[in-house]
Amino acid sequence: MEEKRSLIVTYTNENLRSLEESLHQKFGYIPANITLVSYFSFLYSFCFRPFFSYELRDNGIFWEIPGVFPSKSSLAHYITGSRYLYGNRVAKYVQEHGGIPKIIARLEKYFDDFLIDEVQDFAANDFNLMMAISDADIDFLLVGDYFQHTFDTSRDGQIRTNLHKNGLEAYLKEFENKGFSIDTNSLSKTHRCSPSVCGFITDHVGIGIESHRDDDTEVTVVEDAETARLLFQDEDKMKLFFQDHGKYDCRSNNWGRCKGLNNYGDVCVVLNKKSSELFRSGTLSKLPESSRNKL
Image (tube, rainbow, N blue to C red; front, side, top):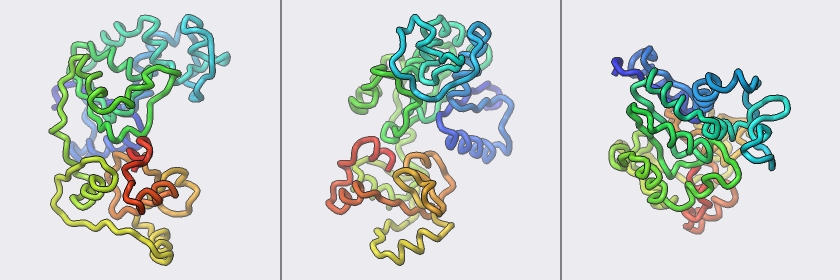
């Protein structure tokens, strides 16, 4: 592996830290031939800045989504009056201004492998960019779980709004049309969840999942207030909330934000009002897709 120059890109900071830990566990260090970056670091530092920053004199990325702006032929479509790039349109600017051949040439010069983690979270202009640069003459490996699509790298009007809405088969077809080989078997089982947890997810959440493990764990529904209070105070047990976990004075995270992390032991999943009602009625699988994927 150390003979190949590999670029690994992932979306969330949590996943970036998780991948760094995995590399340290495997090698004891991060090998010099492996470059690990977050998506927006790759987008700005590798794809945009070398070719466009000098001309635009930009000051970096502005994260708020723009409202209605002039057409893509106008600079105001991509950059604020203070010369900050709209984060959801950096990839679009690169594509609309001849950046793809330059990025492809740069990839082919510096890397042999391009690996994308959590590819299911790439959306809108960012998904289009990934598809365009996959024409580079290097090896691409895209890894993701359609049923863990909980975030989007960005959104921009009607661009790719149906990417995740037409079902798994339609989603996979996007990659097949670009010449990717689809493998739904190699990573079909999880190391993170026990058979008990996988069974609960399959039966109640409605997403089929299997486990590599053979250990027996327990899925328990907590009903009484005293047990809940003790769990809340137990710093050894992670509490996962639907959202706004920072409001609670305990060791916590949000459902979707913790995906990809491997350092949790016992976990207490806190159902909100909607999910609790559906669970009690045996219809938890009817949660809205985005909420179900987070859960």
